[in-house]
Structures are given as structure tokens and as C-alpha cells.
Image (cartoon, rainbow, N blue to C red; front, side):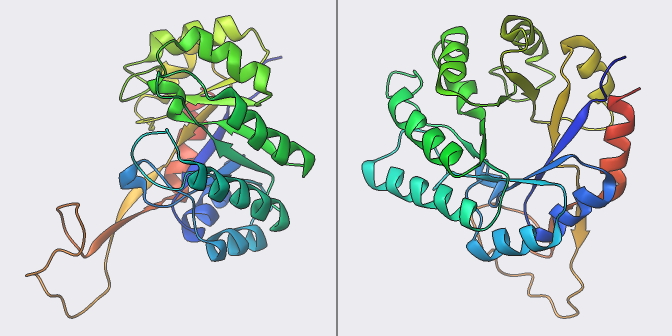
Length: 250
């Protein structure tokens, strides 16, 4: 009997995390700043997510956007955040550090994994994997380090574009580590992606656009670097979560 395909939701807030839970997600990856590919959420977000979730809660450990080559000070921040996640009662963390030549920084990743495992946390390796110089070698390195799974789009912008690579990674991993496709997965493509790659976990933000309830609006200002409507934001939608899970198991 085949096991059901599980959905991990990339949640950009506690509200999104609760929608993921309502929709039937198996796990939440809590983060913020999705426009930058995700960064570590605030301590408040982590605490409140843990308080209200009964499903698994993993937290993204990424101190900034941009590349995955970190300074010694940034690494100290990451280690401190891993320890805080354990104190807050999280189930796991999501990490990824590279060397300047595009290889896995095995030494520092192993240190974070050791801290996490010592404190009872699981570990996912995130899409830093997708910008590695050699994915096959990176796969072996990440297995050696002791991560549970790799979140990947197959080295492409979306998992659909990288589906062929993902299928190859699933085969090469041979059950030694979970390969979890992510990026651009929605209800329109998840069925085909799962069938083609044989993945047993998928990752999606399952978001919908939410219009602001503000009555007064200043339309002559842009507050951030991302051009767009300042009075529209995105949150995970429980209905979309349900649809993706259903179609992943079609």
C-alpha cells in the first residue's frame, strides 16, 4: 500500500500556519520575507505558532536574503536561532550553508545539525542545494551531515522546470534521505509532479491574495522595494491547502 503524499506548507505568518493546519498540512515551515526567498521569523511568530499548532513546526534558519555564504557573525546568529527554536518547542529547523566554490559547507552545516539533534530537532536542508555547483556530490554531503530531507526545485526556478532532475535525485537518494520538491507547486501541477518524480512529500505556500480592510488609503507611496499594491498581501489559504493535498494523492 502506498503511503499518502504529505504537504509541507511554507507559512509566512502564524495566520498562514493556522490555515495550513486547517487545510490538513502535515508540517509547517515558518518563515518571513518570502519576497527574498524567506528569512528567519521573529521570536514572537515562533512562540505563537508553537502555541497554536498541533502539527509539526519547522523554522527557517536564514539570517538574510541573498546568497548562502555566511560570515562568522551570521553563523553565530544561526546557531543561536537553532537553540531558540528548541527552547520554543519546535520540531525542527531548515538550514543551508555553502562555500564560495558552490560546495556544501559541511563543517558549519554539521555543527548546526549537531546542535539541532542534540536538542531534539529534525533538520531539513533548504534550496541552497539548488545553487550548488554539483548536485550529486551535494546530495551525498547532505546525507553524510545527517539531514532528514532536501527541499529542492531541481536547480531551476520552479519544481516543474526541474522535475527531471528531482526524479533523478529521488532515485539516487534511494530512501536514504527524503527529496521534497518545492517552488511554484500548486493545484494545477502537483498531480503531474508527484507522478513524474515519485516524491512522497511536497512543499507549497498555498497562498491567496488578501485585500486590505483599510478604509483610508494613501496611493502615492511605496513602502518597500517590491513594486505593487501596498494594500494587498498574501496568506496561506486552507482551501488551497486541501486542494493540493487531494490532488497530490490523486
